[in-house]
Amino acid sequence: MKSHKSLISILMIVFCSSAEKIVGGIINSDTKWNAEDGPYIVERDLLISSSAQLTINPGTKILIRNHPLPDTTVYQLNHIDSATVSIKVEGTLICLGRKDQRTSFLPLNFLPDKYCWYGIVFLNKEETPNELTGTEIAGAYSAVSAITSNPQIRLSILEYNHIGISCFDKSKASVYNCVIARNFASGILVSGSNPRFVNNIIVFNRNHGLWCDGMSKVYLEYNCFYGNHDGDFLECDPEFGVLVKTNKRKDSVDVFNNIFTDPVFAGSVSDSLATERDYNLPTLKFRVKDTAMAEVIYEGKTLPESIWKTSQSKYQLSRYSPCIDAGHPGESYKDIDGSRNDMGIGGGPEFVSRRSKGR
Image 1 (cartoon, rainbow, N blue to C red):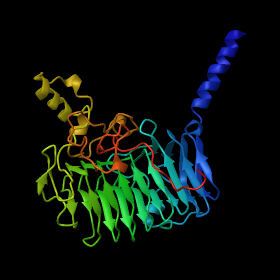
Image 2 (image 1 turned 90 degrees about the vertical axis):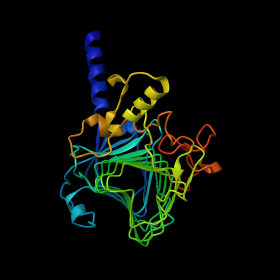
Image 3 (image 1 turned 180 degrees about the vertical axis):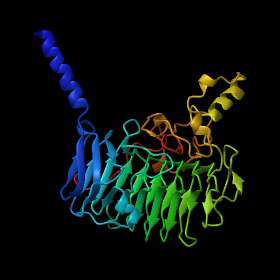
Image 4 (image 1 turned 90 degrees about the horizontal axis):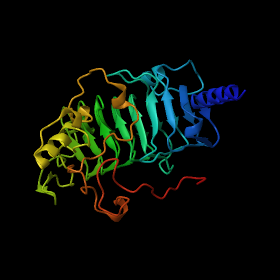
């Protein structure tokens, strides 16, 4: 009898752990998604209406269907949107991931060198307090698109998308302490907007790190650019990337204190080589935990799942990284321990004041 009860308990645990929620359509009222209730499977376009707020709590996983189910309730932005699943925000989206409990938006089936869904599109008014904190987004046409709206994006990883962040039509998006890496067309695309980028690491994008329209004024300070195959900038402020001085670590920087050197992620080939030089030790293969972190070009090869799926250890800085204590020196940017900001997802404060309703 006891064995039967034990078996039933085990089956219940397995059933609960594999629970998932199918979502899509229009959200018309304030809603919360929690890690224990997911993963959430978005099988058709999702629209957060102007009267609603969707709050996504730490550790929640959102999986996106590669091809949308037929649906006429949510309007389409363009032909790419009509062929893929998108998450449109007319109201408010608050993602509350943490450094050790990231929220994630990933395709159900990742296809190397192809976008599998459209991405998150902010279409709301400028004063709407949208926030993506501790969030990982992969496999999208544009991981985040800000059209007129001004979302705040912090401590997030935007990788293996067609474009990492797109800013259009007077958007003033604020992006702090993110990693924007290995996107196929460009890390950042800006047109007719004035976004703000501070303390980010923008690396290994196949074409450009930052692609502007030649007219937009982008606030770009204390970022790291490296290994963007076709160059760090296209049609941007001509002062970006022109090395004029050195910082306290003797790294060359432009007039906006952006650095242009290998960020040296923990477990990368660069980290292993730095350790070898430091200790005069032979290079051993087992010490290189993630050789992909040192690759400059993706080259369209098949990706092992461990590279793109959520991992708490991805993009952590080596102790040899030039990005440590190289971020903005302002008080509000300081790391949790009170030291100067480290660029990337390991730096900056864990929490900031929020203006979002209902909190």
